[in-house]
Length: 446
Image (tube, rainbow, N blue to C red; front, side, top):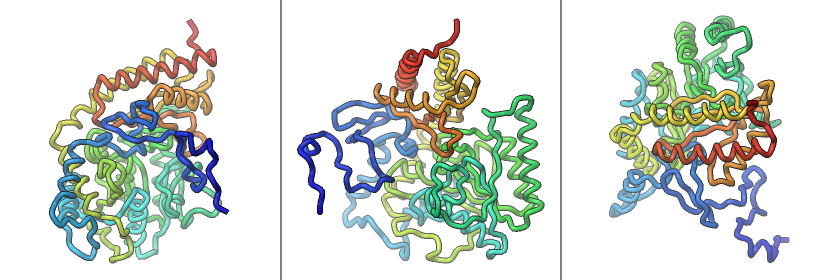
């Protein structure tokens, strides 16, 4: 029998939920509009968005360049909003050419028939395995990583939070510890850790002849915004070249300006074999993802790695407008100043509150550890700060990739945030943190 709404449910200004699957239960807050870094709920309350929603709105909400490009296309006489991949589409061709022009040298092939980061990582895995015709199936991945929610990308992920019994694809994965600059063991140094981790990977690469690739994030965001050292990443690239192992770099989180370049691989000065893209590709417009790769990995036949709504016209139009704005507006040149402004606030808060441990970031991506007095992770107080911030009209993230990282609040605002907005947002964050400090009685000793 169909469940009827109660009078209270009918009158409440909240969304009905009784038909939702439990994996998609939303909060009672309904977001109804947004502009720039601001969003507004159905009660008119304003929030400053330091999350870019699902970490994908690199130009914020309703950016004029994206809106104009899409509206102009929709207004064209006879415009059809969907064209089968069987037919040519100049927007797809233009976007592929643009991505190749901005990517590290040597990456000259693009697959745009993808819808999200999970699709892109699936595509990369298929290409690496197909290159060896199935003779080398194993793939190295990082512990703590999050690479998607499709069966294979779940299996490739090294975090525990999203893994469930009987959910996943193949088991041909080898998980290694990445270098974590915020968690260097006592008595060791960052240089020693880089050497140790590279030796571990090199030993595996030389002894396991069934390895076709390593898949890695440059900044494992869901693991707590771990900024991998450049020397470490370049060492991995060297080992891959010496052992004929494909280097698959997941830039779903890091591409399109957040690290100060359209591609974070350019910031790290590396040339991967495959780069996977999603999220900020379209500045948050309709689902579109991509892989950009070297010609040798152009090994998949038609139908083996394409989705119905991949390469759709409006997504390509939005992505082109996004690329044009990023490269012509000067917005990426502002990233160092904005990064410094955030870090100034975060370092001051670290001095003020004993439960804030390491603070770190790259570009406009930041992680804040919350700890007990002995430095061990405190996985409760950050939730209190998160909620207090939300009450004050500020949206931040709690990292949820694996149980050991639940003590991190992460920040990833749109690139369009201004210095004044940074100051206001961090003022709200400081006020939220102070309220939790007062409530718990955890203050700095005089």
